[in-house]
Image 1 (cartoon, helix red, strand yellow):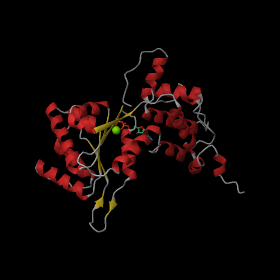
Image 2 (cartoon, rainbow, N blue to C red):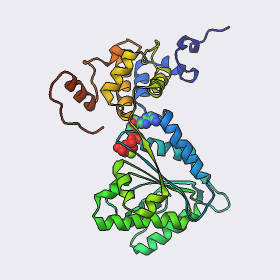
Image 3 (cartoon, helix red, strand yellow):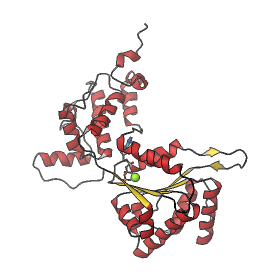
Length: 312
Ligand SMILES: Nc1ncnc2c1ncn2[C@@H]1O[C@H](COP(=O)(O)OP(=O)(O)OP(=O)(O)O)[C@@H](O)[C@H]1O
Ligand SMILES: [Mg+2]
């Protein structure tokens, strides 16, 4: 048998072994790059979304709310689902067929901005000076033309930034979209999004809610850490799932997905730079340049007053 460079990195998934052979700079770039890692909760949500997408049109379509703290991975899931159902160009009609239309709720809940966001996400040219009614009509017509089978609105918590009156109008617009197009509406946002939807009894009844919970130090968490061990381009086998490593990572990140990813990526980068080439409980020492949130945790453990938490 020919021994290839690949078999040298048996601790990695076969598809990722070649990255471990790259020079340090390229490996650091790889570690820093955006990627998708599937984990238990995210897979459950994706399966639910698939299920909704296949739902036949009916008068009262089921809707889904994905809610959880900031940094839990809601936008990541939505974007992954969008990539799984990309637009396809239709030769006959000359338009993109777009099963999943994803838009962000504008930072202020203005109905017109919602239609504009939706139009932009369908790659429609900007419309100047239309009336609200006209923009609504065009948005609706275009959603039909592109064959939208699901509308996903991210950052729904932004709705609460408006006045009570604005919120009511906005909720009405959402209700209208869901009823009129007979497609499932998916909303994502923090717990505030849930509270906002609950203020509309009719919508609340239609929404099934999925809570993306912070990680516990359990088997699912060990599974996530295992996935990291199998893909990070480090040349030696890491040990992230020893009780000590798990506990340390969990403590430093409070189980928030974004923090876990940042912490491990930072430590992996350091392991490449320092030539250590593996991660274990000691990789997360106090000398590591950690994300700010983790530093507040470290300070707390040492008995210093905790600093104010800054973003996630
Ligand atoms: N499945 C995943 N694969 C890879 N990275 C992820 C995943 N989920 C979360 N992350 C990491 O966590 C970060 C935050 O995720 P995301 O933006 O989806 O959070 P969010 O729940 O939408 O937060 P917010 O409420 O602030 O919008 C991402 O930038 C990424 O680094
Ligand atoms: Mg988000």
